[in-house]
Length: 264
Image (cartoon, rainbow, N blue to C red; front, top):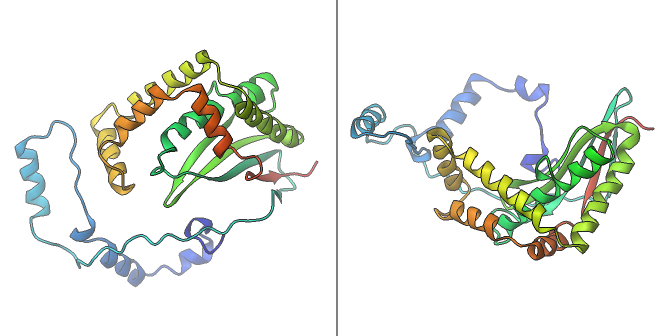
């Protein structure tokens, strides 16, 4: 909703309100040593550490003040199941389906990611195999969990010819029913496992990505064992757990469908 920080977007008049004093006030509020941490990754030597300390100093800088804790704002939900945004000249329609799910601090989060990956999180997923490869309705469709402070959002996204929107939505629900009712075959689960472990290795293979990983744990309020648990969850998740998590979090009744495009 518009009262939530994530529900607003900038318009031209917002930029016209920016002045030099607004920028200075923002700088004074946020840019100071009490709101700053330094991460160093790679071949770190004592000389490099001394150089950094020499440039940044060991004394406070800026207008240091206590950092205000993040105030979580409850999102406003809608009672609408289907939302249509008309774009009269659109050659294609854009579809987003979504609902709230667990956040990254929840004990179900890591194995829920495996379930969502099997459902729509990589090129060989259920959604891609059905809606792209078999039906030919779209060039690509995907699902993932978007992490927000205090909540997670399951998002299913695609773009396709206007005439295929209703059929795509039906097939999404069909794949949800399959996950609710049937166990994923062992071969399919092993493929998902291999993909997720390979993607994990690629994501943290260099000094820059490693530093970003630790920044992520710091800013997301995660502990040092998060990445080990992530690997363990991928290796240990079972078909029975995939089905249980799908029944728990892939709720057709909660999914909101948003289509932007041309009426057919």
